[in-house]
Length: 151
Image (cartoon, rainbow, N blue to C red; front, side):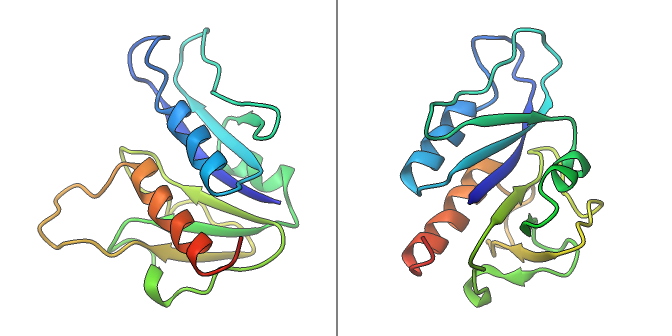
């Protein structure tokens, strides 16, 4: 099982639901089995985009995901300069049940420490002040996994 864990953040209306359709597209493109969505939307009509081949499970935080999937290998994708991550070009993607975790667009995930995890970062220009949207980072990481034959 390959999963992606990400934050669904408020985009101000039910009609603009926090890029979940982009996450579903990512899953379809790179054969990701499961979406693990951390609901930070705060609106009652929230429902992530999903289909039968790419179901979405909703959680309140990463700790709940770690408890639901205790045997998974976690890949914590962090912003440059956070934690002590391995640059993506140097990283070897694990086999088996793997969950790739992406932080919120508004910050990092270094405070979450699953017991079995690798820390990875996507190098970017030092001219970048704020980093990248989580979905952009996820696309780069999952494309890297795909092109290296770990699919």
